[in-house]
Length: 244
Image 1 (cartoon, helix red, strand yellow):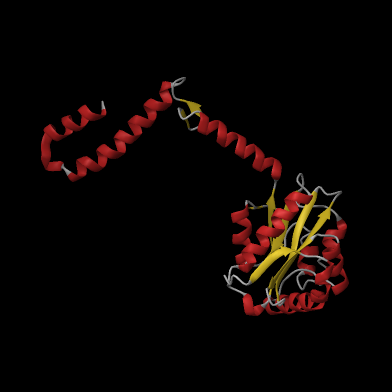
Image 2: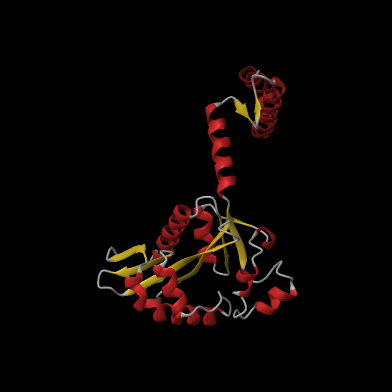
């Protein structure tokens, strides 16, 4: 990516980019035939003034990309929405940097919140996955009506309504900090006990170890015998010596 691009938290000083950003959001959604709800320049400026947005610009102060944060259900859920990159800077890796920055900002502002997103873009799905998001059903997202009302300007809103908000064209992805903390704890516990195999202690239950050894022998012996059918009992017994 061009080293002249800066990705940082947006401020009120970036308000003059708001109209450019909303116009590009609308054009991008129109080109895909899907996309996020329409946002106004005033709304984008509000996010900037609240410190709930990330912007990418060049050192020459040219707009490159943008993304903002929304919170729902008394900050129980947080959404990183409106990711948009100027056409001239797409496929440069800047989208990944913006997503990482807004993710870090979300974790800093709302450390206990579940972070989620709805997207139809494969590139965004890949970025989310790398950040630790996992695909989920819509039932695992916020139930706040204000969030779902925001989808009214989307071309697929009728589909969402017909599915009773249980499904739509977008893929739902979620980062759950509690789940991630639990996974980290379990991983550390597992690494601290290398004898633990398949979630069970090999020293405490030798049957697990025995079954594994026999399985490995079966697989290896089967392949070895096919390869050495003319070798007779000598090779077979020799192999048995090493295994047993």
